Length: 389
Ligand SMILES: Cc1ncc(COP(=O)(O)O)c(C=O)c1O
Image 1: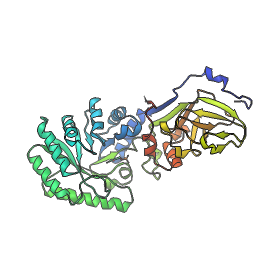
Image 2: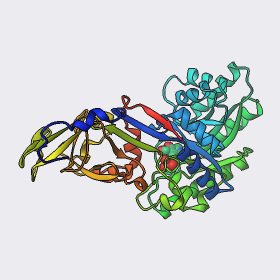
Image 3: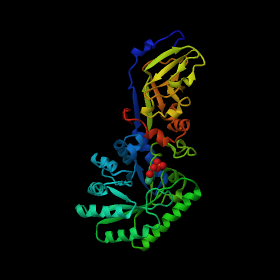
Image 4: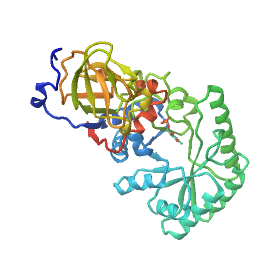
C-alpha cells in the first residue's frame, strides 16, 4: 500500500469477502490429535472432555470427530451438556460429574438417557437411586468421585466409607452400578500428584474390601496423561491436548504431533493512513511512532480477545505478523501494518496453528497473563464456529 493513500485500498472491492468473524474448527485435527494421544496412552482408555461447548470449539461436531479418532468415551461437567450429545444421536458412554440444585429431575433425565453420573455425596447417590427406581431402564451407572486434595467436589476420605457401603447396597438392589472411581489432579508438582494418587488408591482398596469393584479407575487429565504414565490407570480424561493446546507451557504439543484445532479469523474492516503521533483506541495508550497504516479488525473482547493482551498480542495477515496497538475494544482492535500490501477484506488470523505463521492461542494466553484454556473457551457467541476438515 502506498504512503500516499489516505483511505481504504481500491483493491478492497475486487477481493472475495470472507466472513467478518469466524472460528474455523479443524475436525481433522481433533481426529488426528485424539488418535495420537490414544496411541501415547495405550492401553489406557481415552475419555475426551467436551464440556463448555468442547472448550469453545462446538460440542457435537467435536464429540463426533473425537469418537472417529478413537475416543472410547466422552466427559462433560453438566448433565445438560450430556443430554445435548444424546439429542444429537451420540450413543457413546458419556460421564457428567458436576451437579447443582434440582438433582432429582436432572438425574431422572440423565438416567433415562443412559448418561453416567459422577457422584460426589451421599445425597447425590440417593438421588441417583431414586431416579433409577422411578425409571424402567435398569441400574444407573455411576463413578464415585474422591476428593484427593483439590478441595472441590468429591467424597472426602472420611465420607467415602459410608457412601461406598450404601453404593454396595444399591448395587445389590439392582438400582446402581458403580462402574468407575475417580479423582482429579491439581497439577501442582510430582509429589502432590503422587500424594493424590496414594489417597485414590487407598480408597479404591477400601471400596474393594467393602465389595465394590469399579472397572474403571481414572485420575489423569492431559498433563498427567502426557507426562506421568504411572498415573494413567485404566482411563485418562483428555481435554486441552485434544484441542491441540498445551496443558502447561512446558509441554511442546507440536513434538507430540498435536496441532491446534481452532483458528480465529476476521476480515479487515478498514484501513487508514495516520501521521506520526496519532492516538489509537480508548485512552490513547498508544501513539504512532511514525506515519503508518492502521488496519481495523472487527473482533474485540466480546468475541474473546482478552483486553489484557492489548499492546502485546499480534495477528497474522498473509502469513506475516503485525502488532495490535492501543486497547482492544468490545468489537474491534487496531493493527499497525506500516506499508504492507494489505487491503480491506483481507483475512486476519488472530490465533491458530503456529506452523502456518499464526500466533498460537497459547501465545495470546501468555500475552494476557492467562492460560490457553481460557482463550479458546471464551470465544464469544457472535463468532460462528465453522467446521473444516
Ligand atoms: C474432572 C476433569 N477431568 C478432566 C478434565 C480435562 O482437563 P484437561 O483439559 O487439562 O485435559 C477436566 C477439565 O478441567 C476436568 O474438570
